[in-house]
Length: 583
Image (tube, rainbow, N blue to C red; front, side):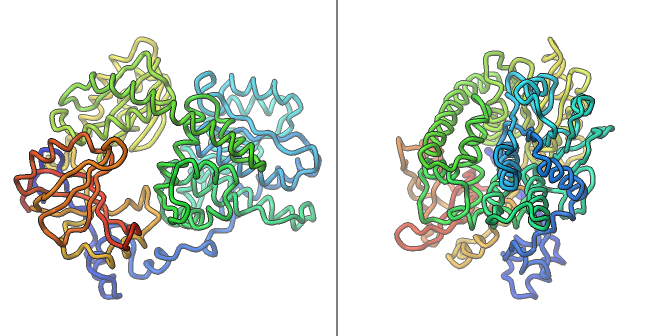
């Protein structure tokens, strides 16, 4: 194992030797076999992994509850009843809401298309709360059916309230249930009941399954004879899957792969306008990075900074001029988010406690909608700053509400459980979560959360504490265009299928220079001539420290990409440069 460097400790990810051997025997290169095996892909599964196809999508009715939910919806549509889709303000919630709005709207009678209701993040909180339900009812007094998307599984009292008013309720969600389930007319949630291959669906993935079942049944019953509406819905489901950090495996891999491939032809007009504003090439193939770092964050910014209704209108509008206007609004919200994020980040970095088991940072004057992003940024800084003690879980608290992010090897939800006495509510999973602190209890929460994180280190080998993982240490001769193209075939990348990271040991830098707008990025050249062109994005400020260290051999960690700029070639996207380690 490599010795920890001053910047990071990089360990090689394990790959089951039996799987590696089977893949090599099937004709895959040793390096590619290692990448596949570490992702749990066998020789038998590799062909389907490399060619995810919409033909292999599961039947919607394979998801428990879809049959019953589609019946309730079709009954309401056939009676011309008022339907409200009760969504959420993040990208998953907005996409899920749009999916059902498009599908049910297509089969509805003129004048009876469903309305979409999205809670206001700062005033009403997440999902179905007493405040959001009250506003929904006041805005939709004649509602007869409420369909939740990306929320509702823990809204026991709110669903009961609607039912007591004679309103039918269909709950669709993908979050973990509590001890009690809502008494809905139908419930669809892969975390409650589903075959394993459907369990990882996000809220929009669940809505996609239900929408397909509804439209298919409507055709069979002669309630709908119009064109296929599935294309835009597929794109929305794929976008949400990446943005909500769902595992990009199995059914999700198919959704994301097909959504990326079909985006330019099938995406809603508003999303195309938004993507155009992100200034990417009009010809370069889309990747999961486009969804996760360009489009998704802009959709999220609308709900974080103002109202997610702006993003919803962007997706649902079919008027080109309106789409452009909405895209501009959503993009401006993202700029506002970035400005606030930088201000909060600067303050948060000044409050880091070096060596603490976790960082719990209180920003009373911050913006709640940006807390999670700031937590992620702090975690990134902890990776780069050895004086901080290395990567540890980070919580950012604003006005009693907070978001947490954690590096590999920690479990945020377990730490929340340890600190539960200081919390009013919490939720999430291993890598991220949200919470509300009891009034006046931030200091006690900090103490308990840090204790919970420290306990998680007890049984871990010392060398793995704060470590990051790469897929393989390689030689410069491995970094060919042919291998870069093979790596590219592993797309789409994301949770469950991370973009492969490689490392070079003991290489020497020949030149480091700033490139891009205001020198934001670094172009790095090596004395070994067979190492491809390399770029370190958004690290321009580190030019002097990297140059100062260039007199000694170093280790470089990077992703391997294919660039079509000028001549087609392999290119390194640097992730870390640190003093040379030993094997």
